[in-house]
Amino acid sequence: EGVAVQEYTALKLKVKEWPESAQKILEGKLPQGANVYFVPATLRPETMYGQTCCFVGPKIKYGVFKVSEEEFFVLSERAARNMSFQGIFPSWGVYPQVAQLLGADVIGTLVNAPLSVHKDGVRILPMETVKDTKGTAVVTSVPSDSPDDYATVLDLAKKADYYKIKQEWAELEMVPIIDTPTYGNLTAKALVEELKIQSPKDTKKLEEAKEKAYKEGFYKGTMIYGSFAGKPVEQAKGLVRQQLLDDGLAFNYAE
Ligand code: A2H
Image 1 (cartoon, rainbow, N blue to C red):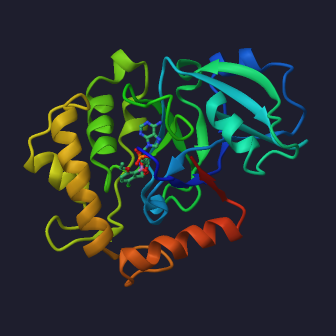
Image 2 (cartoon, rainbow, N blue to C red):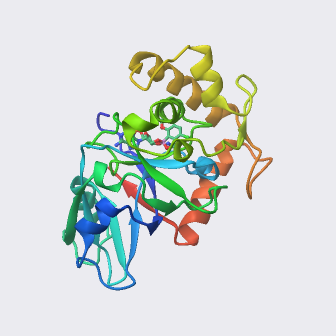
């Protein structure tokens, strides 16, 4: 917080299949053949190999914004407005909205997550702790390396009926992508277990786990998966980010 600028990598997760609830709302609002993307903002682009799902806040309002004739983004209005002043939309300060949805309407959407080991796609799932006031209000989930994400997928799998999801959507395999001296190669899982974190609402302990996971992963971690396997995470972060940018799978977003 404060005056520091947060430099996010905004990733483009292309929709492969909408649930019926979203289809109804979007009917007639998108041109034939339009590509729609969920756009999570991340600080850890080097972990994108490990995406197993992507979160939205079920009660948060999302817009579908037109970026070009073919491309539409799903994100918060706040993020769309910020992006319109960062050259992401064609006209300065203009972010045309074609539809509005609640997070709850898009649960179950199948998206293609760039670099993820899960090539058939991952699901959009609910996360109660997503903030509308940060990033894009879309959070891609890497449970191997993010304690928040790990605690959330455990909870979703345990209470799949309550969340109205299929349990298997929350249980895609975690593949080790970063090895660390203290916590092994599933850092978030190790920390959630060590600190006995019981639920995504264990905010205090999760703060501690996040801090530890970040320090250990970023400063002491080594990539063990992907194009930069063998390199320290500190180096790989920029390299993976650049690769995503070059391939048109991501763009820079700051706030
Ligand atoms: B990170 P900062 Cl592997 N609400 O990406 C809640 N969390 C949000 C969010 C929002 N609106 N927008 C982004 N985030 C998450 C990867 C990751 C992240 C890993 C490890 C740690 C980590 C995969 N999830 O973040 O408050 C996103 O999750 C630890 C803080 O702006 C984003 O990076 O500093 C990070 O929080 C941005 O948090």
